[in-house]
Amino acid sequence: MIFFLNFVLFISLFALLIGFFSLKQKRHSNLEDINALKKRRKEESKKKIIQFLNERGRIKNNDVEKLAEVADTTATQYLQELEDEGLIVQKGKEGHAVFYVAKK
Image (cartoon, rainbow, N blue to C red; front, side, top):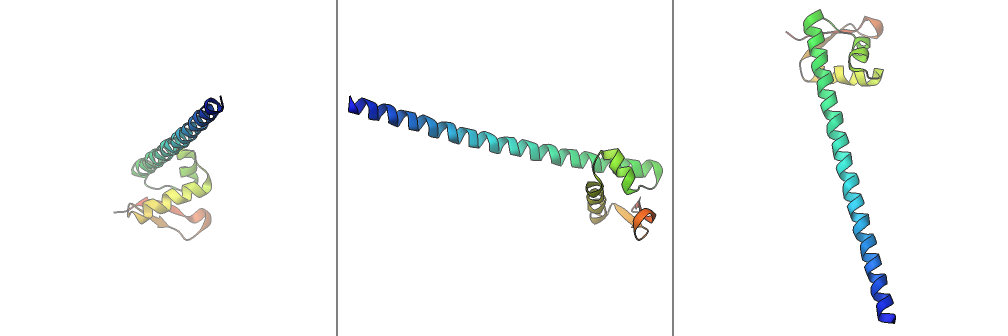
């Protein structure tokens, strides 16, 4: 009888461990999916910015906020990345005078 109870206890603990590790693996997989989605959305937004620039000749931070439906800091980050990639150039020094054009 004691052997049977120990065996049941062992099987129960083993099942709990399997469940724990499968949940941990699933959570990791979900995070990878979320990160891939964020990266894809960011690249799509940057393409929209370039398309906007090609159509209108210039773009401001507020335009990016509306176009990509992102916050001010995210819009600034996207513009900075495009500038670092050599695709756009900042004109103006600060504030409302700042806008971006396509690099020639």
